[in-house]
Length: 72
Image 1: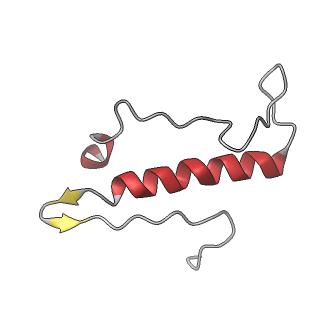
Image 2: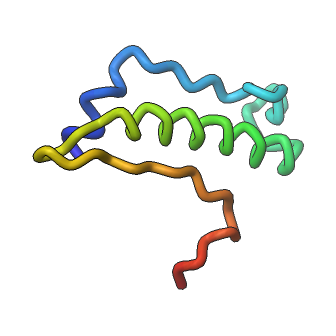
Image 3: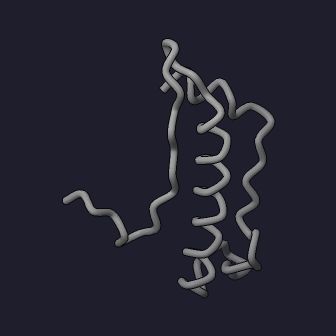
């Protein structure tokens, strides 16, 4: 995990990329909005991590939305 973490300093993942899904007490009020925002963060991390090379091997990172994984 350390090589992946090296690319994170300074990276900002806004919680409201597609709009605010939280109320004044920071509780979720719009689950679909929260899922969309989570996806935006996941795609950003996949893009950043896909530019990484670990022990001479390129990292291939892809965001997989909740419930879309083929692994059980």
